[in-house]
Every structure is written in structure tokens, then in C-alpha cells.
Length: 253
Image 1 (tube, rainbow, N blue to C red):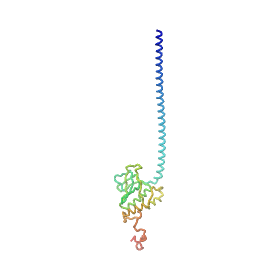
Image 2 (cartoon, rainbow, N blue to C red; image 1 turned 180 degrees about the vertical axis):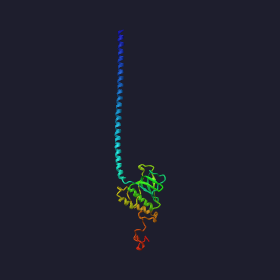
Image 3 (cartoon, rainbow, N blue to C red; image 1 turned 90 degrees about the horizontal axis):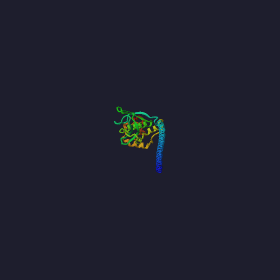
Image 4 (cartoon, helix red, strand yellow; image 1 turned 90 degrees about the vertical axis):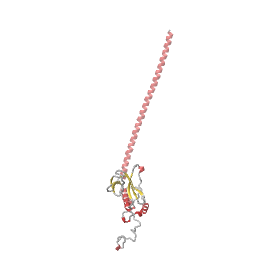
């Protein structure tokens, strides 16, 4: 009987030992899982903290870049727009759908069908349709280009100075200026102390060729020496002195 009791007691101790071992193993596993969970959270917190730091650094870099860009833009604006003025013009045709505040190109179309861009991407500041006047901000150079275009408009009566409105104001969509002014206007642009840098290359031969092609559209009755070079008119020739007839001239008779 005693042996049987001792045998049962030994079996019970074995079971208890196994149970303790299983519990211990479970605790170790649970502790390991808990440690892994804590470690994972710490790593995630570290990563999130590092990401936050990187985002702050990136935002600082962006802010500094923006400030630098604004400073450069400010300097550029002072250099290139120092002499921008709002000027009123009365010879520009503005279509009915164009309104104040729109961005436009100002172009000139000659009676032979050729068409050129005078200035690109300008905002209309004021528009009076009753008297046909339009206010546009221009640089000194652009104002002289307008003066040349007005002279062309008078010289070739069927020519038209007009605006075309922008729908897409992206830089890639902006027009390139390709109008060539009168030779004497170009000389004025070169001599003008308010123009620091000329924005285009002048081709005198091309300008003269264009004038020769347009000469048949010119109105000789409206001749004004301030408007362009007048070819084949005889002015300046040896036969014409510019004096009254009694003094040997042939112009004022």
C-alpha cells in the first residue's frame, strides 16, 4: 500500500514538474512575444520620429529654397521691370470677348497676310471700348515696338494691330516675339538709356525685304517722313532739291 502511495506521489510530482515546465515555457514565449512587441513599437517610434525629422528638414530646405527664389525673382523683377509703365494705346483692335484682366499677345497683321507678334503675354489693365483705348503695361523697349507698329499701321492702311487672348498661361504656351521694328526705331532702342538689354536680334535686311514686299500696299497720299523708309519715291534724289520752283525745286510747286 505504501509502495502504491509512493508511486502515485512520484507520478504526481512528475506531472507537476511537467506543468511547471509548460507554464515556464509559456511565460518565456509570452515574454519573448511581449519583448518583440515592445521592440517593434520602439523601432516604429524611432522610424516615425526619423521620418518626422526628415520631413521637418525637407520643409526647412523647401522654405529656404522658396525664400531664395523669391529674392532672386525680386532682383530679377527690379532689373527687368524697373521701367515698366502702364501706357494707353488707341490703335489696337480688341475683340468683344476680351475683357480687362485678360492676358493677351499684341500682334500685327499686314495686308499681304503676314502676321507677327509684337509683345507676348501682357495683361490688359483698362479697356474703354467707346473711345477704343487700351491700357497695357510695357517696358521701354516694348513701347518703342508699339510705336513702330503704329507707324506700320499708318504706312500700310490695311494692316491691323490686334490682341489674341490666352487660354493656357503655362510658360510652354507663351508666344515668341518675332516682329522686327523700323530701322530707325531699332536705332532708338539701341540708344535709349532706359533699355539695359535688347531682347531680340535685329535683321535689317529682313526688315527691308518685308517693306519692299509691302510697298504696293502703301498709301503715298499719307506719306509722313516719320513712318518708315520710303523707297522709289524720289525724295533725296539729285533731281529733287526740296526747294520751291522759283529756287530750282520740284516738290513745293
